[in-house]
Length: 379
Image (cartoon, rainbow, N blue to C red; front, top):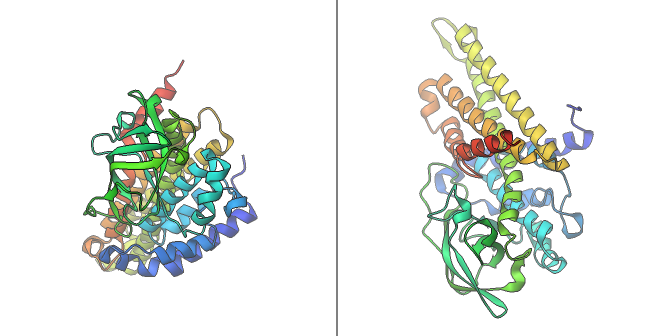
């Protein structure tokens, strides 16, 4: 076991932290208030290699590991949780093309995805299929050298702005074996988008339905074989869960730093808040929970990198623990600030709103328990 980061890992972690502090944190409150999608900043992050973190180098990727990605997203989310999380989604969609696409598909899209000249979204969830993802209904009927798509996807980050939509669609029988993966390009006739969703958090990225009405997509845009879509989706989610857990780590770290600074400044009853043992113990628990969550994310990332048989279970464990712990740490930091924590003048209420969805997406934390229990109880 090696718990120390390599020099290279420390270097790109520092680059990500500096980028978060200089390019994200100063603007995060404005982006949240104005519902502004900072594409210019995303492209600056791409210049540092953060838009193709585990994409191969021949198409402009950084060819790093899942552990490396966790370090980067943890650092970026200290600056802006919502923007870092969108970058995670773009990375997941790009990885699917890199991992499962033909050489022609890779060369067509990835050289433009890694600098974010093209932006990608991931489309699995539907209005009637959330946790039961294998029951998705968006139909792709084959018609010569095209599929004709009808249906819709829900809660899609980047909808309407993104250039590519990596979509899970039904090409065959009911259940997971009838799902295939298609890349749908913006501007395709029959592709449209719903109204922007009005959300609690994640306001620096647009979210809407993606709608298909007799949308003709070339068979050449299919990733993998027919019927492999659900496998592709689930493999992508192992990494996505690590990334979103890492975003919770970074957001919780930012909140904990705020709380530490605040108790050293604020006085009540004639002494600093840091001198009250109740708050000392609270901060001790917050720091301990954060460190435990961090170790679980790093360990699970190492498992996914090594492709161990229990990698999916450990990714689910880490996602469940880190997102729950992260939210609780942020909530405790807000409580320590009292009424000030509830004001938009401080970042804590935004941290809380942004981190709350991490317990829902990439598989709810209840579904994480289903995965863990299923693997744990295997003979």
